[in-house]
Image (tube, rainbow, N blue to C red):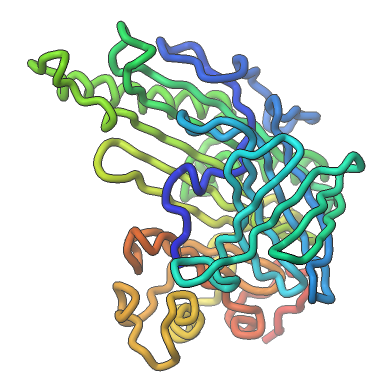
Amino acid sequence: MKRPSCAAALLLGLAACHSQTSQPAATEAGSAPTATPPAAPPVADSPGAAYRVYRGLLAGQTDSITLHLVTAPQPRYDTHGPSSQGSYYGADGHPYQLGSQPSAADSLVLNDYSPEHGAGPTGQAPTWRLRRLPDGSLAGTVGTQAVRLRPAAPAGGVGFAVRCFTDSLAAYPTEPATSPKARIYVQALVPTGGPAAVRQTLQASLLRDLRGDTLDSAPVVALDKLFGQQRDTLFTGYRDEVALMVKDTPADERPSAMLNYEEQTSTQVLYQAGNLLSLGFFTYSYSGGAHGMNTTTGASYDLRTGRRLRYDDIFRPEAQAQLPALLAQAVRPLVDLKPGEPLNKALFVKQMPVTRNVFLTAGGVEFIYQPYEIASYAQGEVRVFLPLAQVRTLLREGLPLTSYAVAKR
């Protein structure tokens, strides 16, 4: 199954942006951000941004699904208009990814990226075609079947404001209209609601994870300052690289398209129920060459405390020896392998490695493998879900699983 491998396909449903203007860069949209203390409610969405939760029943199913959706203008420089990014799941907790290209303000066309539903080169997943109703509902079709999704409150009383920032720097400042540019986009979710202490801890965790920290003790930087640091790092390196590439080069031979650098970061809600929250942090980077690179990092949080749950917080030590066989069994149908066929017929590996890039739902654990990690770039991300029934005895006690009990040992 080929997941979207470019920013246009993956950065779906991001927030309307605030533009930074402190650098000599071309401003793309919005107005300058105002620093907001991480724990100070209420926090407003960026202009045009919205995070919404919906519930409804798909045709042929007896249990309702929950859909998390963020809708906002597309951040890519060559695409404009609202787009959406979402994740949905049913009672079994298996998450599925949805995303759209820009569409009319009152409608949504969502693509299902799940190989389980036929996405990929050999199949066609059903398309969601929805319109927004005056009461806030979404109505339309999934494939050929009618569906209606009604607004729902976030589980546990924890919602999110969507904040994002963007800026750009021209490679050739004297030609800003035609010059290639370095562009940066950072989109984040700011927790709203819930107990103040939990909200503060959760916001600190999210800021660390947005920056890619691996230590829970790392100092926290406010969102607008974090964007400024990342922008300054990109622009400083970009200026140096442009200077080297155009040195002693005639004006009519200067590089163009390959200098349209991009750094994009966004946050998606993958699962939320009871005291469990799971997010996906997506990054896309292009700095010349044939294509950019995208990665998604899964992250789970205990809403009783706001603390991040990492791999070692989720799994017992003995899981490392037992997970490869479970993952090998689960990945085969996702990459069109029959039972018993060697994995390296479709993948780079003979045995499934145990990635620590995981997130938890009340129904199981999803493992995210980045492009080139176990498969080609064309294959894209490979996401393998193991249901709770298979991993129950491998999980630590005390996890915030409200719908299913972890066996005590």
